[in-house]
Length: 301
Image (cartoon, rainbow, N blue to C red; front, side, top):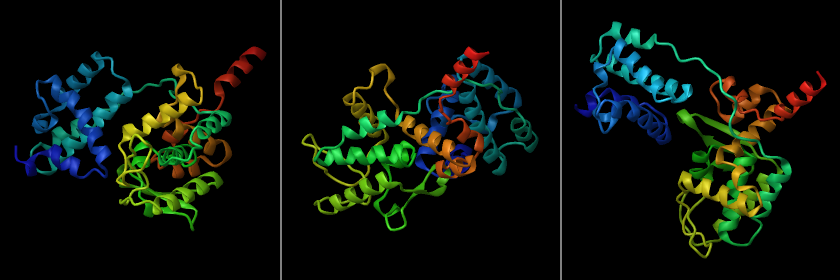
């Protein structure tokens, strides 16, 4: 199937970021491999119809996937089907039937955690060293805990997007949506010191972060990969004495900050700062001590 007539290729081209594209490809690969195709690009998406799509959903349920994962796959299928209809490869009535398939309803207990202020301070204390690597790792922590950025937003943030005079960081997030996140006192100091430091080094690049060598010396400013963010958080957490079974994830940094925003401000403001399209997504990040409060209520009942 030619690229220009492949509805998947067209759908991917309309997505805002490379991260979104990889996510969609990963989701649709589950469908393709179920039907004997190695890659989603070779699957005949234009041949989908209402019964086949329902069958796919049933097969995904049989794999005991989370309902949120199945709904995300269904959403991607609808997106590809829409493009197939727009380029004349799928009947309009068939697309309407696929589009009408409702998402699976369900609810799960929240995952992840919000770290306490003492725990966060302990993590930052582990980065108070003089090497390039320690200073860089401290920047990663402040972008996560103080600005609530996603790990891909951390890894690919450009120097020009740190507006110290305006006290904001301009972030391009999911869906190619841009937002501004204000700096607090800690993040202002850390980012200001880091930018002064990297400008004094003989390194090139447009990004705020870069790779380091075994000596802890900064090699470049070409950004880092997402897994590097996780390795830094894991390493610093272990150095700080966090129990191995309770190590924070990179997204826990974001959960922590969004929880703080929800505790002190309007949920709509928290939604804007987090870069969420829907307020329900933001509220799902709330990791306030509800469990302890519920136990307290139960004990008094």
